[in-house]
Each structure stands twice: as C-alpha cells, then as structure tokens.
Image 1 (cartoon, rainbow, N blue to C red):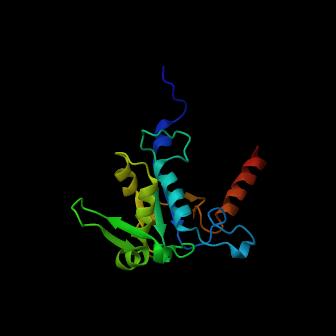
Image 2 (image 1 turned 180 degrees about the horizontal axis):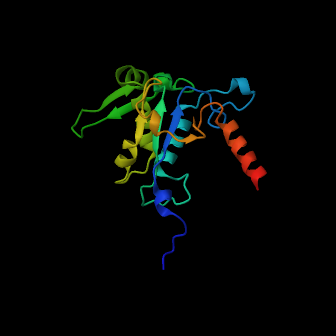
Image 3 (image 1 turned 120 degrees about the vertical axis):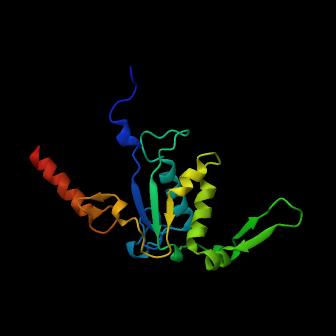
Amino acid sequence: MSQTVGATRLAYSRVWHHISASTPHQTLSTIKAPPEAVTPPSLGRLASRIATILMGKHKPIWDPSTDCGDYVVVTNCAALYTTGQKKYRKTYYRHNTRPGSLQTITMDVLMDKFGGAEVLRKAVSGMLPKNRLRDKRLARLKAFEGDAHPYKQNLVRFGGKVVGTSGWEDIVKAVREADAARI
C-alpha cells in the first residue's frame, strides 16, 4: 500500500517564481520600520531566500536527497543592494591548484566585468549544499540585469496577475471573500 496521500505529481511540479533585486521588500529588508524606510533585500538575504526556493524547502514534500525545488527568475541584478563597504572590500578568490596561481577580484570589479547576476549566482551557490544536486539547482536560477526576461509566460499567476506584483493581494482577498460567501 502506498504511503503517499494526495496528488504527488502536482507536489513535485516546478513553479516559476519572480524576485526583483531592486524593489523594497518588507520581510527581506534590514530596516523594518517606518514603512517608507524599507530597503531592497540585501545580497545575503536575497541569496538565502533564493537558495531555499531552489532546494524546495518551502514545500511540504521537501526531502534533502530529492531535487524538488522550483525555478527562480531574478531581475534588476544590476542594482544589487549591499550594506556597508562590502561592494568594495569583499574579495572573491580563484585558484587552479598550481603554486602562485591564486587570483583575487573584488565585488565591484566583478560586477563591472560580469554584472550583478554573477555576484548573485556566486552568493546563491555558496548557500546551496555541496552535493551532486548543486549544479542542477543552480541551473534553475535565471538572473537578469534589467527588467526584461524571456520567462514572463512561465511566472506564477493568481487571477491573471503575477504573484508578487502590486495588487495581487487584492485579488486573493476577493477570491477568498467570494468563497466564504458561497459557503
């Protein structure tokens, strides 16, 4: 007899999430009040949230050995928000195991050379578990410098409105009120 209750195919289906790196976010911001002082999510908070979605930890069927995560589309990576002097002091290292081949590059030079998407990809990569699923999970991260991206049709919608955009909460409330009135 199966131990599974419900539609498991639906639980394992992948959903596309959209995150903007430049819009202020109430829960991911380092400043909580007053509401007008809320900042965009910092690089670390943004990367940890993305890593959680890529691993599938937000789903009730999460299993560490199963790849059940979703796709994440991140826009406006050119405007990544960092606190303090990290943009100029954080150093990334590379080494090819030969003596004297250690190469360093700072975050601002890396952003100028490859863009903010590469900085975000490195941050998310560091937060994913170091196992054979890491590359598959990281491949589901789609990061873009501006607002334009080719995955607009894949994003999660509720009532025809993309989840996370302004006004989608009003549609959710209207649907819930209609369901409550019907019952």
